[in-house]
Length: 105
Image (tube, rainbow, N blue to C red):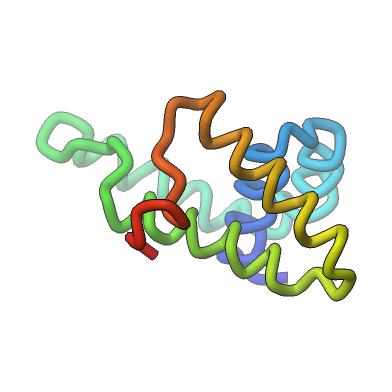
């Protein structure tokens, strides 16, 4: 697993409210990236007073794309449709714009 795979999978499982699965992924794979986490922590410590660490539009678009790609990979059309509804509901509950309704992605 790559660092970006860990980021993507933990984001998707967290977004969908799959807390137990999210923890399982984290516990299984996060340990192999301790060096990357240390580097990120150092970078944050050095720049936190001069750089905003809030999510950017680019981050939000990336997260939206991850969710869409996750849905596309579901082979069963009915289950895919149900997953898309769950994601749409999560967008609403979190007060986020659904990119499928805004043509952002």
